[in-house]
Length: 113
Length: 113
Image 1: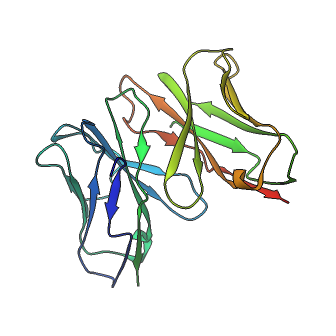
Image 2: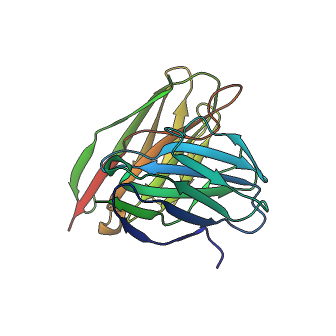
Image 3: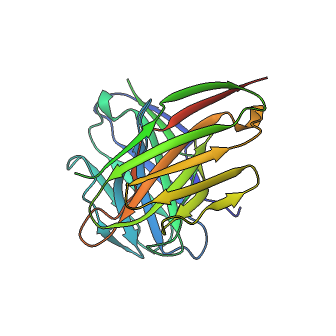
């Protein structure tokens, strides 16, 4: 497909479990972003990749959150020891470069019971 | 801390009405302001504004930026029920700030038939 895709679309897990969320950016987009959106709020920046490297991870809330992009394309957001407060929609976006408009995927709705 | 404030938070109008959505910001190292429409999960890009006073237009939607007063407006004329969505305003900064977008909480627009 031509757009950003994310899997799974929904994930329900139990408190304390580990989860992985996947993002496939638009082909050729070097910049990739992860955001988290809680109910009634705008998306909140988590981490930005330029190519394979995390250029800015200042938005990650704590060390339970980690993201990788080993080949400069697909990215995985990993959350260890999930907490109920991690429940949110996790959005991925990609862009041609740092200063271009970001195109968003449909998100993964994470529910931690 | 960078801040983006949108108003109103919610708005209900009738089909055919014209609406104006507001976005004000306080950020360091402003680069651009973006508007997105969010219907289900994925925000879809509407406009990117970098220069003051230049109106961007796409069909019934238009937007303008005032960098002196630090705000932007999004206008929708002859509204249709398909315009019902959350409209998100976001600011991109550079030079030391976080690389991701800073979003407002959004305006939830409902168009009644």
